[in-house]
Length: 330
Image (cartoon, rainbow, N blue to C red):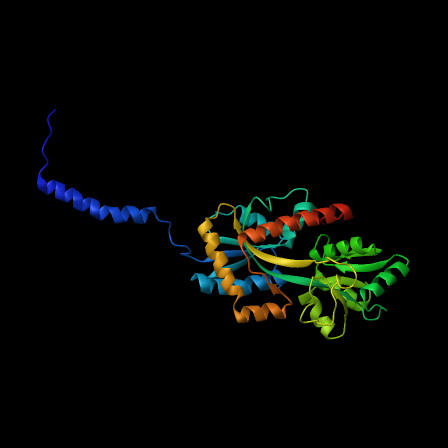
């Protein structure tokens, strides 16, 4: 067998070429830096509500930490299902995020058909905050405690009425789970939104409501509504004299609206980790914590795994409540 000799200058040239190409090959194998452009944060509700306010507060600060703007996009409709479906079908590249809420765990049981799977189509990033509801009554009623509320319900011919922002809302389901645990006779009066429900409660057309704390607080503080109990496990620092439902004789009662960040399934783990770390920094900022405090919201920093376990537990919990109560979406 004959070997052809190779000129020394060719060998040197090839070695130099390989030396130059090696860093390029290494660079090509590394993932691209994220983010390199603005990130979309989809909210399943209209502007102005608690979900939107929290999204904008966190979005601005996330943008500062990540180095790219986080732009809130409201895609309201069908109790947040429209926005969720948009995100579930978006590219899993890290440039579309979603404010995942309690509604996404209740919708799984409220609707017979969804255009997305709340558990399979989303990658949890981390919880943002929780907000309790407040059991409020018209101050003209002789009700100053949960015990009074139950006695009044038992004495009334048709039970006590409670308003909500609509069938299947967290406000409605708070009433349903209270009804189950207390064995109280209660008549649900659904409205198309929280504002008209509050108007009728103030006017005495309905007796009570398990309203979201940010909506109820101004009326309670002005004396237009009376706060009977708070639905979280702990009292609110904004209403320190108002007991919890659990304290009022129903141990374990804990119902809160909650908000988290999620991304489409398939989003790179490196992005999930990066956003989770950024969210942790945001929730530790004093100005963010103060703004959340003013909304009666409690920051809930944690891991993606903790959020996943929490969402699974909430889905199971609300499925049981919805099936037992017979609640249906409007």
